Length: 212
Image (cartoon, rainbow, N blue to C red):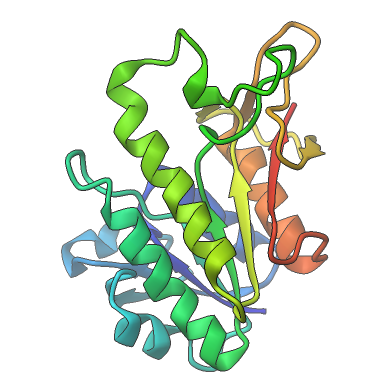
């Protein structure tokens, strides 16, 4: 496939680019600032662009099979997530190119809490609330778009660098927890799950989640 990845120099985006390239896909890696080109995988096609600008999104998704967004706003700019989501959705709505969006975990329900979401639990860190609530609004923007072919992937509670095992479990709207009570996956296996969904679509216009 021909894949455009926004946020390609980030921790998740870089692993998504590497996973896609390892599977033989042609990747256009997009960053806002050309100064970040050295951080990109050398086999990707480096481009500058702004995921919150619908014109840039349309230009960088033209002729592609798939757009993946793994962008994250700077602290204090969490509201940009919604603006970016709307710009990213505009291209697929007009062209039919599929969009895979890396989202947040805060809106997932927590097992055994009677339906509380992650952000509603008593021990949720207050400092994380702005980005958590912005991710919820990001998903709302996707659900409100009537045409675009989007998929929203929520990580588990802990997403960290680690090993690529190729192993994971799938879920929908509930936080996945392992036998030890942990909700976790490596960024490497998160990228595996994302590219598996890209190659063999199982979730269209819905949110899904993954974890060990």
